[in-house]
Length: 260
Ligand code: LHQ
Image (cartoon, rainbow, N blue to C red; front, side, top):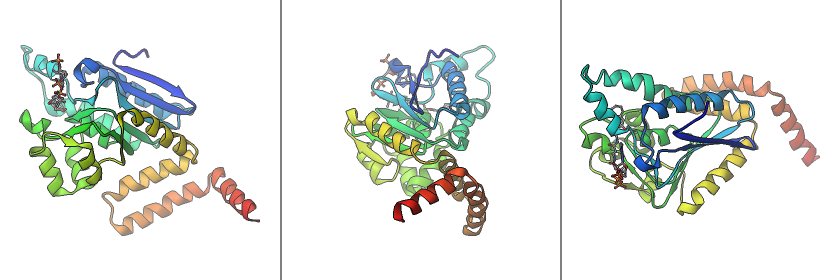
């Protein structure tokens, strides 16, 4: 599939997905949803891809829902249709695919992320943010909506309830330094270091056995809602799978050979 709203390239096992509607700070429109669903399926299925980086073209990361397109929907004679359905059919599958794909995703947050653009970043496994970038979680409240696409879940899990509430209401620009202090991102770097940092992480992730990283991702996600007992049991189950991979034996042998 040829993409118009995305750039997609794969180099040495690392996929780079660039949201490419820079005039509107890479806001989501219908076409971008279709293309994102397609590209995520490709990442999931392509055995040559081990890690994916998501970033934005131009000065923004992603400004959330394209409000021009949303207004056009509201103005249709037959009405806007169900927003709940819009979320269920567009945003929610996107977020769940990012989470459920065993391959790791890195958000390279080059510029402002607003509304569902914040959710997209938070759904990734690692985040590196430009020191000039910011999160605008209260974009939702400002248009009389609640955070969606997972932000009501990600924010309190990552930053705690009080900070989640503050971010969703009072903070117009949650700057990178505070995002780091709150645990919303893994690293803050100068703008020209965002992609090199993401690339370096991707290289290091690619060097690890993919199956083990994928199972780890599953275990950590499930742990967010599990009791300790459930996690212990799930770990035992997944470890059974990990221990049966040839890479496990090979790496144990290699470690012992180096010692002996
Ligand atoms: C935009 C957008 C945009 C269109 C900037 N759309 N053009 C899901 C489903 C159903 C219901 C609704 O909700 C959702 C999820 C959501 O994501 S809701 C939240 C939607 N997003 C927003 O409300 C954010 C709106 N944008 C902003 O608040 C600002 O643009 C931010 C804070 C992101 C950046 O501010 P600035 O750096 O000052 O840039 P700007 O405002 O000048 O924007 C640059 C251009 O991008 C501008 O166009 P122009 O032609 O004047 O250069 C904006 O109109 C356009 N743009 N966001 N979401």
